Amino acid sequence: LALLGFLERRTPLRAWRDRKARMAASSASDFLLDLSARLEPDGGMPGANEEERVLSTILVMLQFLAEGNSAKHGAFRAHIKRMLEFLKRSKVQNGAVKEMIERGKSGRAVPGDWSKKKPESGLWAELDKAL
Image (cartoon, rainbow, N blue to C red; front, side, top):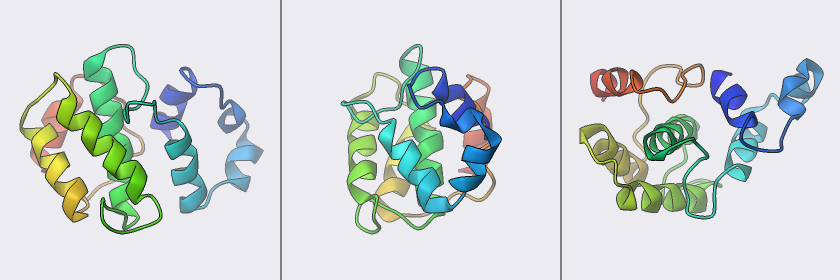
C-alpha cells in the first residue's frame, strides 16, 4: 500500500503504520473511507506540488473506480465529484487527466493494481499505457 505510506507523511492518520491496525481495517470500504478522509478541501489529495497532487488524486480515484464507484453511483460518489472538480481546475492537463475525468464520470475502472504505485512523474507513462 505504497499510496497510503506516501499519504500518511502528509496527513495525521498514522494508524496505517501499525500492521495490526491495517489488518483490522483491511476491507475495501474501510480502505476507501480512509482515502476519502484525506481529501483536501479543494477535492485533491495532498502532495508537495500540483503534479504530485494530481497524480495522488488519480491514484485514489483508480481505487474508487475499482470498487464500483463513480460520480453517479456508489457510496463515494460525492468524493469522486470533488476529485473530478479538482482535476478539471488543475494546471496539470494532459491526456491521462482528461481520460480520468471521463472515467470518473462513467465509472470505467482501469485494470491493474494501482495501490502500490507512488505519485511520481514516471507514473504518467504507465497511466498513458493503461488508458
